[in-house]
Image 1 (cartoon, rainbow, N blue to C red):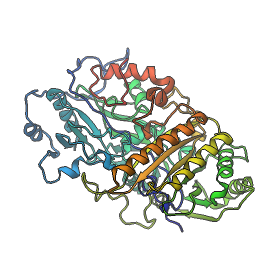
Image 2: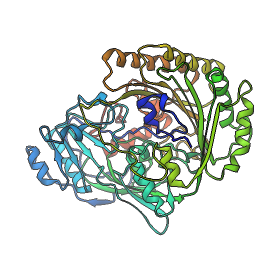
Image 3: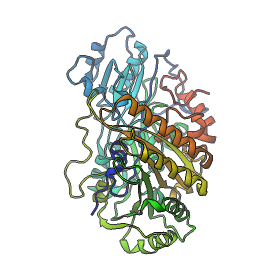
Image 4: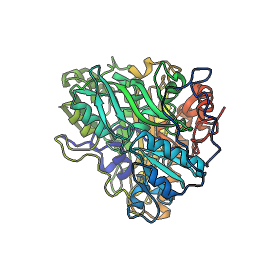
Length: 541
């Protein structure tokens, strides 16, 4: 059995570590502010709607209070510059953001802590960022001001109706583990250290999304602390516009969620598969996979999800090429679809094939790059600002139609170019994930997540090793932008907001499309002074 590294292991260490199915989602959980004046506390019940369902009052804080006074008001710890654990507290996964030095990191343990932190940031005029997993590709979950870290609010429970209550700080491995104890699951990503907040708020693509929808599609409600410091409980009947916006509008835009509620499904056994082809047939395999996932080669059941990963291998003779995935059922159900795929690649048979069955939790642990049998999964040890660790750059596109032969050729050519580059000392390439199925049966305006007609997403990535010199980092960034430019004529103008790209032009339209006007109206209603803002936050109307 080949152990499957999670997507970020691919992005951090390069395709030399590839072993099978890889998925997961980037975290969009940032919000920042420069301390605009406080909004009026009146009427945040949705545009033209009723007053909100307030769970807790807004605390009143003196604008002149000190950071020490803030620490005294918080139940959770406040870490400041000079504290022994400051470099650990301020670190994100990517070392590119180690230069950011927040004035404080508040580890919230309650909704009241979150409200107190928000009110302090407003009163003191400092920037604000919410953080859960810390995987934001743009670094939007850090700030020079105050970080509100919700990871200690991570409780998970399931009621008799199968509704899971999940603390906003829960990371995916805890969500999967705790739900599995009740025989339940939700569709979500595979990287074990990604936080539920950024994943769900930006959509939430995962290995069961074709069968059960995006993570945001399973959301039935949430508790949110607004810019005023008030906490509202939202669902389809209460603050419906805010509930709509939370399902795909991206993290850090409208408030800080403290609790999610999700409709769960039965945790069933899963079959994992992986097929590797020689690089010589890369264009043919790319074309065959796109025909396969769109049903052109035969019926494509919702139970079947797949990903195509292609990229350079530092020190290798050729790039690597793999199709892998997850089937929600016994391996016998894969026979027909895999036969269709193999038959479509005329020039070569797979060099290797792996098919294994597992219980649900074991399968998701393997998808996260962990041991199926137990043990630690998703350690954050060693994530400390200033510590040597690998980094990466990434971007994305949405496919509404297959790339075509010219698009396939362009991607293969760019990967081959990286394979020959002596400065490319970590892997770089593409990850294509299959969409469709249940994702596409939700209308583009039913939630804030607009990309319902997609057949697949393309994630472009380029890594660099720990301690890489500036020359290598700069070369990696140039190659990634060249790859994105080479693909541009062959893909849509849409992009996945959870793979947030700080260099993306016209990002608001790319992430939100026709839902942008409603999102801007909702943003203006709930955060009229734009307290929650960062470089790619939803603009006011």
